[in-house]
Image (tube, rainbow, N blue to C red; front, side):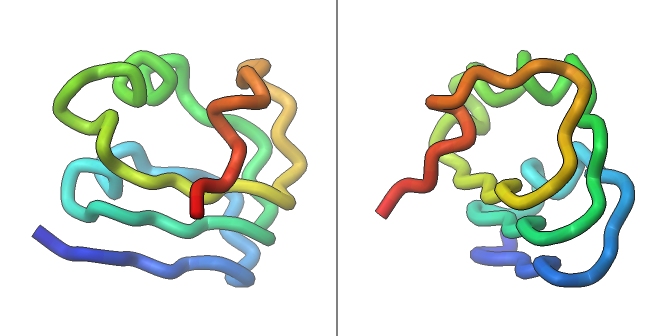
Length: 75
């Protein structure tokens, strides 16, 4: 298991769901990601990865609509 993957500021256009299966923390903030899969939203509420941290702020997300509390950073 990887502790943290930081892919912020890389002009990524796609988020790969498997990143949350191999790392505890994933930062893809400040990229060009427009969509995340509905499967990812379901996985985020799954016990297996609910303890994971995903930072995806400052991306032009348009699909799906993600509840704001899911995108809030934790300290």
